[in-house]
Structure formats: C-alpha cells, structure tokens
Image 1 (spheres, one colour):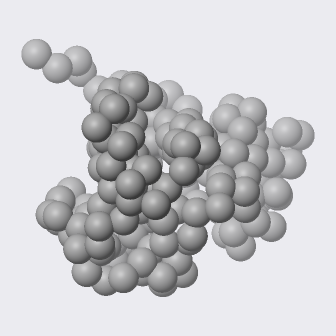
Image 2 (spheres, rainbow, N blue to C red):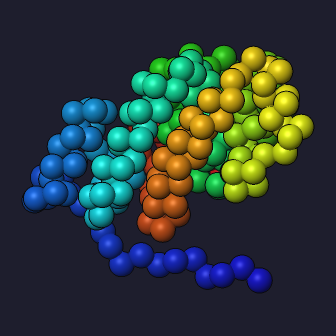
Length: 189
C-alpha cells in the first residue's frame, strides 16, 4: 500500500513581494533564466535549496564536458526515473528547443522506447541505473558505458546531475508543481 501524498502548507514565493534571502536568490534565478519558473518560486521557500540547485546545475552545465544533448539525456533519465513530470516536461522543451537532442532520441525517451543512438542509450541506461541502484550501477552497466566512449569521471558528473535533480524532483513532488506555460506543450502524464 502506498503512502498518502504529502500535502504542502507552503505557497510559492512571489518574486515581486519577496524580501531578504528569498528575493536575492529569485533575483539570481531571474538573471540566469529570464523568468521565475514555478519550481523556483516553490524552492525559494528554503533559499538554500534553490541556491544549491542553481549552483550545481550551473556547474554540471559548464564543467561536465558532456554535450548539451548528453546533458539533457542525463536530466531526462533522472527526472523520468524519479517520476517528476514537471522536470520531464521542462527538460523535454530544453532538449527540443535549445540543446539539439535529435527528435527520434527525445521521442524514444518520452515514449520509454529504445533510444536510436548507441552512445546516448548507454548514457541513459547508466543514469537510470544510477538512480534506481542508489549510485551503485552494475559492473556490466559501467563496462557498457565506458565502451560507448565515456570516461569514469563522467560517472561523477552523473552523480552531480542526480543530486541536482533530486533537489528539483523532490521539491516538485512535495508541491505538486504545475507545469509552466513555457513547458506545457511537453507535458507528460
């Protein structure tokens, strides 16, 4: 029997009326993405959560060495595995409009079908297993990952991406965050 869903008592932080640390982190978020996503307004209830998320997300994007396409595959794998429909929609839009993920790859991920690119399939499988196994992928999965052309250090960046997505995925679960209009065409059930 599954547990009853968490019913939140907190409300999103309105950027216009925010003060102190909440305003500062929302100002920073606004500079980074150009708007305040619903997820950020919720996470700002605990400014350290949003700050940590933005910092780790930025470092993954800038330092992982993975291409934008590979980064989206990782974020989609984590979000889908964690059942976060908000982040799956958001990263689907980013994958399609900004990161250059080939349409057949994005479609396969969203439809939970085999990915028609061996290297991206290995990345998706490894990331999914990292989430499901609590960071303990099988030797066979790691071997396939390395044989696909990735390096051991890439596993650490997957750990960073998983950590960042846990902050967002779990926050979205707690708040039942509604998908922003910008991502609504990519909504999933």
